[in-house]
Length: 74
Image (cartoon, rainbow, N blue to C red; front, top):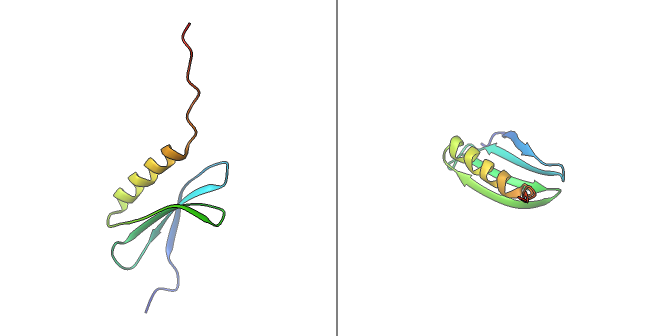
């Protein structure tokens, strides 16, 4: 019988409402990460190791962030 609840952790969020969640599952692969905005799933993946899931989530955060303005050298 499946657990009535899952362990869900918010890894990061952005001002536009985008959030990244880490879900610990009972079966392998044990960790699912997903990036959502509202009801739309932007990215999703399942991995075997928590550390790998956290590193991928951080990569996704970097890719979601707007690029800083380029500095102009005079």
